Length: 440
Image (cartoon, rainbow, N blue to C red):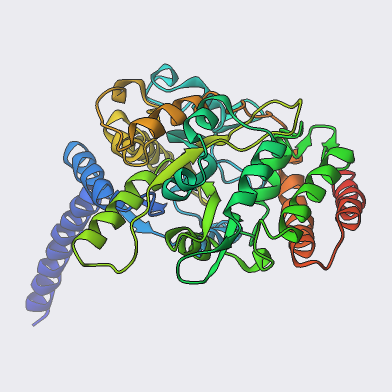
């Protein structure tokens, strides 16, 4: 009896050793999962992403990419929550921000890359830096400017190709925008200019073109003088004169496009080159009977500048950044770098082409066709040349500006648009509250 029990125990021990070896082997073969959070960069981006994931995993059988496409509306908040909890994804789409650096979880890439930084456009790389440290690799350089309704522009006799190539002043824009005020064929209100009012972008665009290229510098805010007051007076006049809707504070991007498609906006913003293929796709759907509406053609236009000031396009770059988590292993970090590099490689150039933007990876240049009308292609090249380099302010200053923007600029500008604040009162809010934030 004792011998039988002893034999059984021996057999059990042997089995456990064999099983343990087997488990150890399978554990070592387990794939390292790299989590990627991204956004619907354009209509077909997820399909492109799947191709990029497949080609990467084919070459890296020990790594698995687990991706999630976030919504533009809710994604940033979801990421901030994950970051603040110390558990961000390994790779995240966007651009470096001061608060990301302050978290201690955004990883500088300068000494971790396997690829050469010379493979990328230098200006695009500079926009992925904070304090001269590289925190990401770009997939495109974005261009946020203004646009117009080609049919309405031609009806008004406006030479939009001249504006595209030579630019225009605030006064010239205002005079032309007045031609768009009235009623359309359906009896609805028409406006000379429509811009979403649910954020501060309009103020940024016009301030940049009034000698204030940056909202802040290392020394503090720049939006505290007569130029920002002059800019807000100009915007207030556009609303009060009827060139812009009285309800501009409530206009979001969807409403802006609705007014544009309904031929109720002569000019509008913000606009991007990608609107050209998007609008043409809608026109085709109208022809095919899939969508009701009237066809419209898109014209890419510069932001007007104040007399005597330099014309500036709002631009920069976006791409992928790498974050670490608590107790992250070195091998996992290296694998995350590989994933980031692949998602920003020449193979990823389809995204820039689809968005009708210049390629930022030098090996992708000339390999993808940009879907732009000839007149818009010329305009895009001119407008891209007016994008200023980044300010290279410190991470601490950038973090303070994040607070200034969210706590002061956006609510104050909303108050201006809704008539709750005068330009003078809004300017005083910027000065007193902004200086308080930057003095901390």
